[in-house]
Image (cartoon, rainbow, N blue to C red):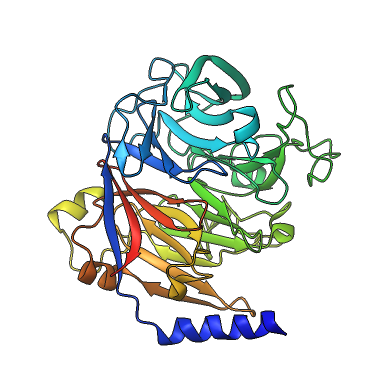
Length: 398
């Protein structure tokens, strides 16, 4: 009974409280910043990924001069702001405080996608460069849609790895049901022992000869960023589209398991190629989609008269912190080109309501990100925004 009363009071506070939501810059970091995270149990330090091959530490608002990790000599260096190469993903082992393991996802000089494990040294601010153990390696057919994100499931402690699919030059009738490739999928593997990895016994395709056993879900164009709701264990995928639609796929873990999210048959809620192939049976439609109507160039020269919605969805997190009750339970995400930031709320009937946070953020913030490359979440559930140009922002209430 007391728990129910507390829940009611909490939601009343959401309605009554005006927050004056803002973003505050907490640190300047080197350009090409593309992710921020925090190991379990950590209170002060935040770890910032840089596409050029570096991991930096922010400790109490100050960036440490020496990087935590430097693998710039191992990676295919990103050449432009639209390049997909480089260091793309970072995930700390759920038992990091005990074993010192963390995992990275990068593109090497041979254009292979590499997921590796490293260890921290006795100095907690320095990784052991020579400790690398390669877990997964995949030669990529192109660098158009790589994916690159990795994260641990909050309930099962399995490692989830996202791979983008090939470009549009596909045999759609074959590729849609091709489970003998990791491309266009999210994998789920067990890295809790010292071997390379094992296949979880409850993976959906573990005992199917025509599928790769690592696959958890598929039919994804480019799962650049995805996350789990810490409270419900829902899986939410920000899927960067091919040419017309950007997607959010928000489903329970059970419904995500083995799901086909549609690509390349579907992009958003529409058939990608209506003339050649459009069998939508068995596909899981997106929770939300928006049109891709902005280019990176248009953003800076203000071309066109229509509202710039975006060009590449940047997946975020369901807010579960305590400082912003109006955001509680909302999925906060954005777009790289338009720098729009939205809050997506889903009710019990799976109906969604979208709120554009930019008007409020512009009103109460001194500055805003120029090009959003990622969102981040700390151990208290508070959210951060990464500006690819070299800045870290945190959500606050003025």
